[in-house]
Image (cartoon, rainbow, N blue to C red):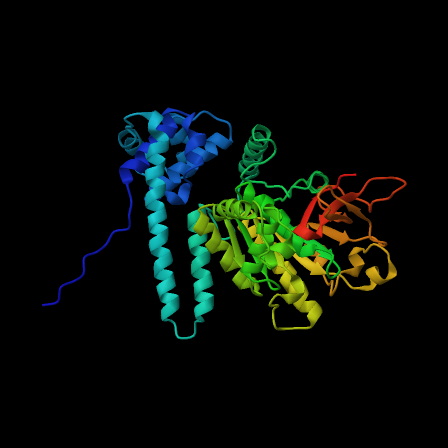
Length: 455
């Protein structure tokens, strides 16, 4: 005798759904809070989805929400009988306490999320069973689905919403930054005030290209920026095709301790060096900072960023890609076409993951040889690098090299930084001894550290 497996009903809570809708009708003040937790497709019963949509339309028309206006709206939508009629509305929406609306809404969202997890698992299993599927592609798709679920994003890209909802998010961010001294969970800063003033910090969805000739300090500046973000609590992903995680960690130790790099490399430590190194290591252990010491493809960068967000339980605040010319480009097409596809993919990824991506790129050697500051035309294999980037930063060490000695007898080198392109920000000139202006930084090679310029 064959025993049929039990029929498993997807998770749902019809009572919580009815209480959520009833609370919205009884107390209009609860509608905004409920809409921040659930949307129409979170409801299991189709009739409840229809009723929720009707309530939202009434609110957006700036009309009062009550049983009369709701019945009229559903009648106008030709859906009143389909949801059960006026009798169902009167009997189903008996709410114990409208003040508990958010509690009911969270129960609805909990069941909705569990249904989404089940559906995602079924889709992953089906994809894995198909003989023509690639394991890496299936894994990346699975990670993306889980990232979207964990982040509470509501569609494939996680960036679709009404302009009113987006304006509400902007206002919340402004309030947080006002209360917290500019920093917030939605926006972090480089730590270099003239640069932050020009580009308004590291903005979600932006692709920022930092370009310079070899050995001008691109990696050091990028690592310093990443350190400042991580120190402020922002999760960071640093992908380096030039340095292993241990090398990057050593740079961070000597920068933050601070101890001259040659002494760290040679283990020539004395006095309180060990104590400072130990305290710095303890601080670094608490940072949400993830390092990848190899070249990566677009798909791998996306996968690493999503898994890091899941690991730290919040959106990644900054992704550093060091550097463009050493990453794993798409194989098809010419070099220019490969670069164009890679940078376009990074820009799309920044928008999808709602985080800034700092891309390092080489410049042609000609500017240094000619002794002139570089321009965006000097970007190596430029293609559409400048077009895909929200901001382009150019780093330059002027000739002759301008060196001064610090109080501890370590040299400080003057380095120039220019914001050559900035959407919704300020384009800065190169510094000029006659007119002033521009952005100058203090570069301390002994500590691989950039600081705000001081005369």
